[in-house]
Length: 139
Image (cartoon, rainbow, N blue to C red; front, side, top):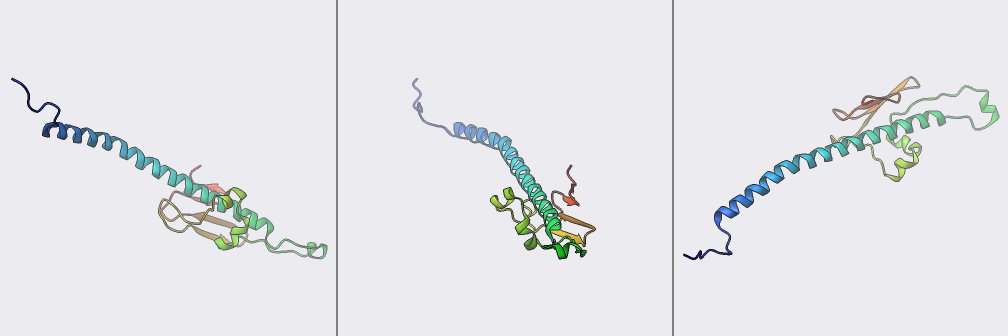
């Protein structure tokens, strides 16, 4: 007897093909999601590092004396709690990357707590970490 279905795809063939695709997808998709989460975590940490460096640059240059008469007077050095104040002090690589104070992991704004010239904290609420005076929680 000749097989009259030669060259045609049967229902069983379609089910097997669908199951193969489903198994491959179930193996690949979690890896892709994990990679995406790792990239978001790394980007968030880079942003915290950039704003930490900007805070130190701001502190070093804030209220610096401009002439010799001001050199004799004490001048205050303080940390800031404003991301707008830190923009001019971001490192060059951060300016080129258009670093924003948003955590890519939680999609929330980063926070700054600054206490005069004593200390500062930059981080993300329920996010990937924080920086206390340049010490990073993930290191």
